Length: 445
Image (tube, rainbow, N blue to C red; front, side):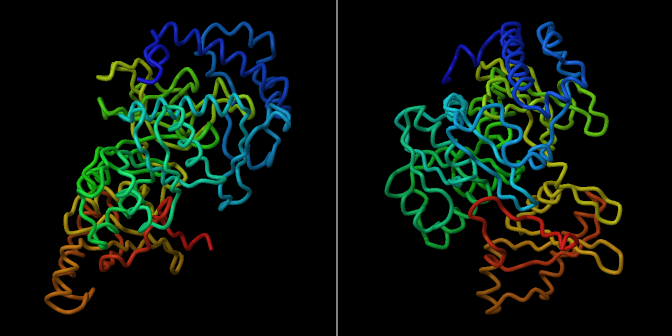
């Protein structure tokens, strides 16, 4: 463990620490963020009420925040510190409108580095390890957040960022990195590129992969672990809360992600009613930051579906764990009355060994009806055999037609989904050098 004292606090001690830090955060917000002061006043949380809060259970009466709050108050309307106290800015890509902007004081950066160091240690990273960091650097929080965590832990950072995959594989060979940090889709991209380059697995020394920034399934984990022969672990974060390092799966338990509860208070709510749900029930994940200075968030609705678990973990940590993100509410597709998430389709596709973990979902509307076309690659084995036996890959071949119908039946039986399935030759679907583009929704054009 990186910080045994805080990672193994007694629950009573932890909740007392959370309450004290929560009150400090609420005072900071009340006096420095006018729009949030109005909301706190409307909810009855004036300074006197804040001081009299008896437990963190009182949080259930605090107002929520959403991503739209950051967009509507772009760029600095939610900052609780003057800009001359802000050491760094990060921002989202802004693909759905104005980007969400977040800021960090020097103390925020130090706490972020602490959270990331704890996360790396939980995953089995040790001081002195060589860590290949393929998360994107720049305005995206992933690269720099983990970079500071690596250095804080006492490991060596290789700031590879995304792209130039052939060069990254060469560096993995030459630097003998033990740990890989990236999105899960980029890790698979690396694995397939190694095969294309005929790079032998024993020429790289990777043992651990820490993957996040996009939802991924257990089936995807199995694919990564088989191809790269590593232990693949899940990390969670989002820029609005701090960036990567909010929670981390431990190598010992490998069953849920430990939340650093002395920094972030988690809740699970009913997405429709906003009611707080007990541990173990699935709902929308909500976070309150209790150490952030520049831009604290109060009951921030992440849009991610998860559940909380307070049972003891094999690693000895006492902080609660969150389950792997099942899906993001914003990602839900509604196709002819069927509600489903891309991760549910992925689970079905990756259950078939004849298919590769490279796919895209194309949603469109034709004659007032929504349609879904699934493009998925066949396995390398099938692709190579077709090239050898027939000289080319024919999507209309009878063998592929039988497989295509099997995929359609699987989706229909498991999800109640009728979709067009297109089997593609290996390498034909664009590879990701960051977050994978899984869904193309032409209805939005």
